[in-house]
Length: 222
Length: 245
Image 1 (cartoon, rainbow over the protein chains, first blue to last red):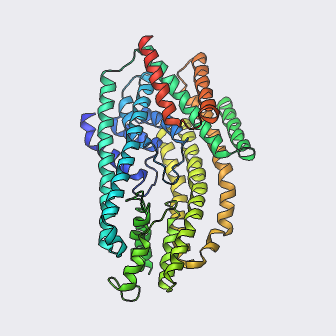
Image 2 (cartoon, one colour):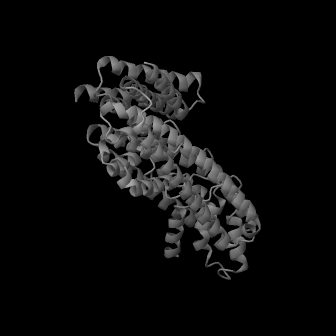
Image 3 (cartoon, rainbow over the protein chains, first blue to last red):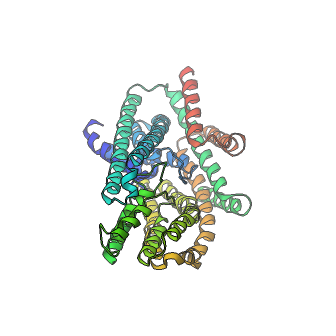
């Protein structure tokens, strides 16, 4: 990991900024963030796999309005590094666990950035109400800088956690398989519950059921 | 104006950069609309420009992709010399509809639809192909939506409600929900099969059991738990059991 540390930190910072502050082209989605982090760490398939599991968790939540949400993208970066090189199913559960923890840290970071932005805007109220464009640009720039610091710090913490989990796994081999099984199941459950909530009752739910049947048929036939 | 419209569009990509609890995306909206206000009578530093900027920086919230509608409409209204109170009312009137439109169209529609496609491709081809197909499908709509929003707002000004009730938008709203539901529904079994490929039938059944428990818990028993908390709780439980095992 150490030889790619700079690239991983840079990727994590970009991913963290994409979540809210810059463009939202969705490189912050765990499927994308995890696959690219896996590519950097040397195992894009494993990175994509843990990214896909975290994507299932991410499908449960809508980033609507003022709701702060878990930063699954940064979680996927840490998870991809944790799983890179780990044998088969053994590392996946542990990596997803690390990813969930980092996603939560990212959410706490978003709350802190928003608190600091609010204090900044209150301090600049006079200039804003006078239509001072320089004050507005400066507030935007400081907001971006805060979010970049958040993304960088959470990525660094995630990489530390990943290194610790790989070096001192807190489970036996059987335990690692158990964690993998449980977290794959939890992810599928979260995505299904999220999709049911999105579909609403009746008509929408029938479309979801149709998709499930089509997917099951695909698996059986192909 | 085309160059300034393009600059304003680029700035809409940063509309949430200073998101805060007091004005939400108000400062970001002012930052994005600033290039469109530069040629108000008196120019930058003129009285109308300053007053327009001060109004643009007040409280505002909307879906980030749809904020361009309000940014464009308000900038047009400032150019047309619409009274300040009417502009304030226009901004406030747009908050609810733009939030609702973006949430339904993007967060509850295009995003899960593209994610479902990406996950299915990841499971059947490769994760890299899955990630790329997700990004392409999602951003074709995303970039088009942002471009349409700013142009529609700028064209319409105070008559912006007409743009929101346009046939294309209504058709999109009707179609995107079912597409998202089918897409996620299709992706779940395909992805589950890929993720569980190394496991025995008994282990696969265990995965299904945990998934079912998750649905029951988050749909009916503890709907406020959220996927992250549920994931962290079951992970901690599994680690403890695995450690003792």
